[in-house]
Length: 112
Image 1 (cartoon, rainbow, N blue to C red):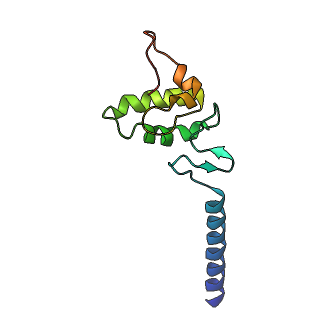
Image 2 (cartoon, rainbow, N blue to C red; image 1 turned 60 degrees about the vertical axis):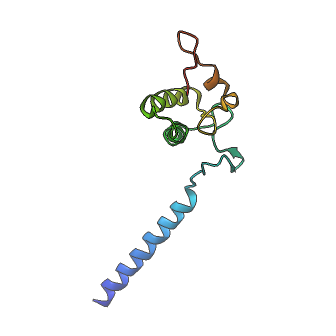
Image 3 (cartoon, one colour; image 1 turned 120 degrees about the vertical axis):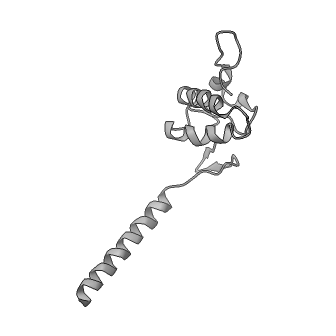
C-alpha cells in the first residue's frame, strides 16, 4: 500500500511540475498596451496579432459600446484581415492603417 501511495505522490508532483512549466511558458498580455517580449501588446504594427488573439482584443475594444454584437462582428472581421486592433475602446485607428482604411461601400469606416 505504501508503494502505491509513493507512486501516486510522484505522479502528482510530476503533473504539478508540468502545469507550472506550461503556465510559465504561456503569457497573457495585459490590456494596458504595454510592451511584452519586444512586441506591442495590441499588435500596433500590421500583422502582429495571431488570429486567436482577435476575440480578446475586440472584446476590450467593444467593451464600452452599447452595440456590442455588431461591434464584435466587424472588429473580428477587420482583425482577421488586418491582424491588428487599435488600442483602447475608441479611436487610435491611425496605428493600424489597414484597420483604419477599410471602408464600406458608402465610404464610411468598416472597422469600429
